[in-house]
Image 1 (cartoon, rainbow, N blue to C red):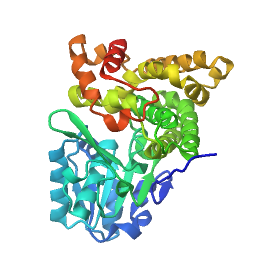
Image 2: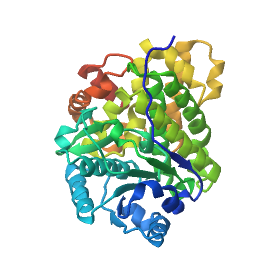
Image 3: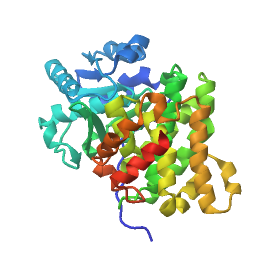
Image 4: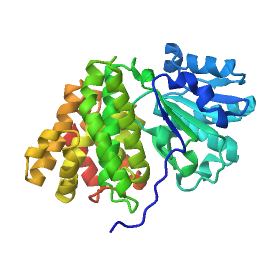
Length: 387
């Protein structure tokens, strides 16, 4: 018998080549007369949002844009975006870009729609709502933010905090594989590994809401991602591979949105907050070492999912050996994709590790979901193994 669980996801999902340029049609029930688009300078420089904006204006919408989003967005940026949306009289919010743009868009919709203070919304289930209508259009295959009730921003100099609430799930997620065709290889690789981490941690999570729907989605996500990530990196114009990565990322997002992630993310966040290592790469750097730490209690779980991205591991019948090989294959995959594989490769030295371990311990909402209890001394050991 399965225990009781809840499963929430985005209200409507559109997956189609060219769907972003049809946003005026797909999103018509939600937009209102004055939509507000949130994106970043990189998207703007490539004009990825251009066809979408043109279609909206031709359809008669009074569109405004905020395009100053940066990686690991700080609180002040979110507040500036809220003020810009308020000045526009926004009737809806469109997040267009990578995970940072989507996370900012979520908070703009929430804070403008509810008039609540961000300090009241931190944590799980604290946001009061309601929010403005929200449409999310991802341009990377990694975060799955278009189907998650989570927004992560940087507070102060380094700390990352999250708002977790069903209010952050959008009314509409538009997945257009064509938007990802120009994604550079390193970004494709890092965001793809990020999506794989979402599926792995969602499947193995000790959350009381770990459920059969999330587990099934995680397996299919890993199958799609494992079969297509190298092709997407090394044959970047392959539309089928790009579409599979975008779909796999979304499925992994659905999985961990309901069965939350754990220690890989907890140890990755300080790498981004302190050293500004991109989130996907941060996950890749600690992933195999966290899995090996967990293997003494989670080997059977990891062995179950190992064959989804790496079917050849099915030939290993010993579950502990298969789980260890799974960690090794993931490390090898990161190297094959051209990612840095050691903390020293991104400027982190032994002297930095104690602070990283202390900071990782602040991620209590994540560590509670880890298969094995993790203390500061363990985090330090893992960082040393990754050095």
